[in-house]
Image (tube, rainbow, N blue to C red; front, top):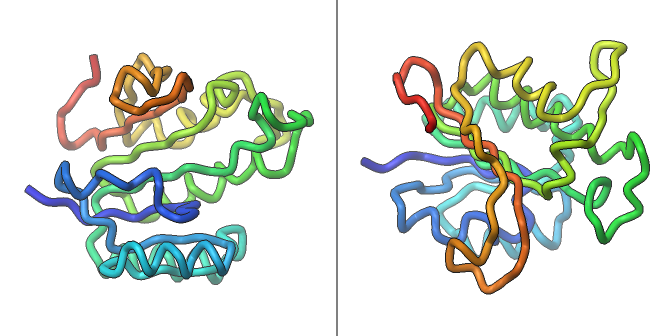
Length: 185
């Protein structure tokens, strides 16, 4: 079985480098930076790149419409981590941390079978403003997607344990749509 996928915050495509090997064909991607988007398109010739700012409603609508046309069943979203990263300034309420809102909007509108949300471990304790309240990013994701998706419980992984030659811990939310009757252990 093969799945059509969408990559949000695609950069140059590092996150999806081996997805084809496990049955996921990225057919659509979004990246804000024109140079990175062009590079991505050279590497992933079968994917259509929508270059533009996902916070722009017209760009987001275009992504959603095309994802539906291409029957996207998998979304990978890797929002920028500079606002949360140990290497960054980690300013409280960094605007880049709010980018998760736009990924969630796309997920809710496309309704893929599977979702992979990847970021730095600090995402687990990063606060955002949502509906006039201060919440943690995981609380927001679960409040918005929890009725439609099952989540993995253990989200922290060490890259080296999966063949990546780095001592980097990552936070990965794996979501499966409820109608698929799959429960994460």
